[in-house]
Every structure is written in C-alpha cells, then in structure tokens.
Image (cartoon, rainbow, N blue to C red; front, side, top):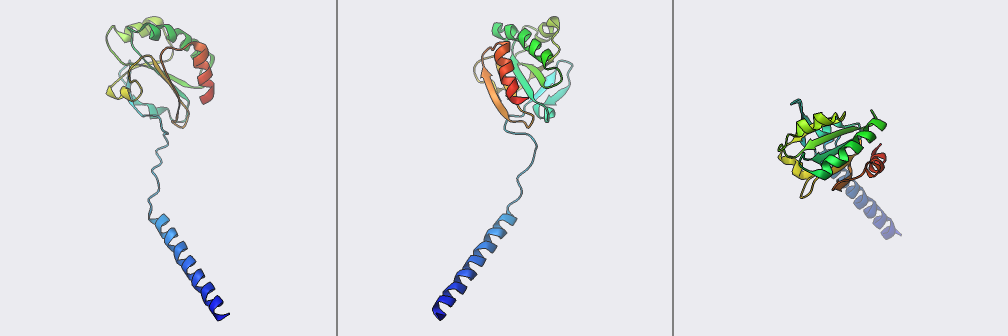
Length: 167
C-alpha cells in the first residue's frame, strides 16, 4: 500500500514537472508576427499615375490582380470582359491590371480602352506570380490569401466564378 501511494506521489510530481516545463517552453516562444496579410506574395507596383503601392494595401477587400502586356493578344481580349464583371460587382473588390512589360505603350492601350479598374506597372517581383506565361490572374481574399491563380487567358464567366469564391 505504501509503495502504491509513493508511486502515485512520484507520478504526480513527474506530471507536474512536465506540465511546468511545457508551459515554460510556450511562454519562451515569441508570438508569431501578425502582419494581417496571408500567403499571397506581397509585391510592389506603381499605378499609371506614378503612385507606389503594395498588394497588401488592399487588405480587408477582395483583390484580383491581372498580369498582362500590351503585345499579348489573350491579355487584350480578356480585359473588356473583366471590365464588365468589375462594373457588375462595383465596389465589392479591387482589380489591378499590372503590365509586366513596358513595350508597346501599356498606358496608352489601357487609357484608349477606358477601363475603370486600376492600371499599373510592376517590377521584378512580378515573377512571384508570373513564371512563364501571360496573362496570369490571381484571386486574393480579403485576408491576403491566394485562393486561385489562373495561367493564361480566361473568359468573363470564368473570372466571375473565381471572383465569387473571394467575395
């Protein structure tokens, strides 16, 4: 009987020490940084008026980012359909069209078409999204998480379907 009581006391003491050690380890671990931005690569871009921005500036609102070039036929073909969807869901999400190449005057093309969404140019870090093909369209939720990345041209209907996942 005395042996059973001694074993119980010893087990309780060991358990107490283990619990204290675990609690101490948790207290020593620094809290993870809370940036408020999810897993989507946060890249810099400049709007056509020259203002510098980052994708994380749109935190709290669904965001669609289209990477394109003025010499790219699929890029130019999908943009009018994007405009229709953008107007249909006006104010519910942000849409940025980031030109990955300044050849053939992307600003002139964009302004001639009269798109109401944001036109911009990107730097080297667009390679975090664009690897080998354009256009590329990224759908990012309000918390900064990349929900879908579409390589190649898409129709307005496909665009809208992916958009609904982040609204």
